[in-house]
Length: 526
Image (cartoon, rainbow, N blue to C red; front, side, top):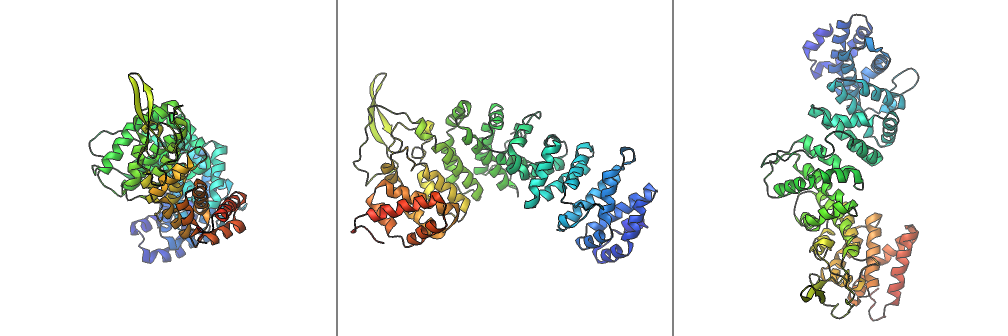
């Protein structure tokens, strides 16, 4: 009978009828001693479970408890690889149907598909299985459970306790692409919870992490799902993990990454549905180096590759991906925060306030310094008060200011937040604030900042915007103070900060209010 049902292929219009009438008989066949009959029955149940409306009936007749009892309690000698694969496939189909795993009991003791008992047994099977098809489905079960916010910490905890992360990361070197993809997607889900553990384990595996980037072996890049997913794992691992960054650097991956970005920009890559995800992975992997720029080898690479210019180009290019823009802005923020430490200071450099009002943000002050063949002229950065170049990652030198300001008009909160953070590096206590405000005003930054305040009246972007406004007022420019005081939404924003903000944001609101009250009455608009 079971063989006959398999041959019918169970069209959807008769599946519900068959499920209601035959499920109990099929389960009894699995319980029986005839392995061939049991195998045929399990195959029929796989077909039945692939049709979502049948899932409730299968659960009601007790198929879950039957399968888990057999899978988790079978002796090694009695295990059937085919039956295991069928049972796990049925579990995957049940999860994909959208049923709440916490509502599905897997044994008489009350354990559910969301319990540590179930997860631990799935991982135990994974560690002992040699079937790549079975492993794919076991990985898919863990990934599906990790998609549920309240369960991901439980999955992480069990993986950590059982040290299964080694098994999962080793699958990245599998000769079966589907297993590599499934394992990579699970690791991506877990990076925000155990990213450093994944990174450290990854670096222990032969050929990793550089193999995730692959080999640039042709003039034309063919982009597929595996390449895109693997690159995104590198981009999602904690950027500050020095072990991964040095491993990538010392294996010469940076030139390959830059070459691929250029090929995609020039349209030389074979376009696929994964091109955008692949580009995001490339840029994310490149940007991770900016979080460890203090490491001498990484600093040397960033200077050699003129990384600030590369990232500026990515901000300005229309890549069709807000994530690429956000990542590039993040990298510029990290690099710019180091500019004040890298700029070359000259003792004879003096601070002058003349000409600030009509300052051109692309210009640098000229100074002289003693050279080998006499005195030579040098460019003195008005913001960092020293000699800036591509080696100091100065945003003015990279001509990145206009791109940062334009990014404030994005509808994506992540892009706006990172753009605001990058601009904030030009407004901290270590720079020449008056000149920096003048530079930003020339780029029409204040108008865009006030636009962000109007559009976003809560959240992290809103808080950062208030801080930037306070720094513009601190810069002392009459033009910016008048423009800020004339913004109608500002009183509401300040009241909201006083009532709903934390101590830090309330302090910012207090400073803004105090500075506005100190303005001459003739300049006040509010």
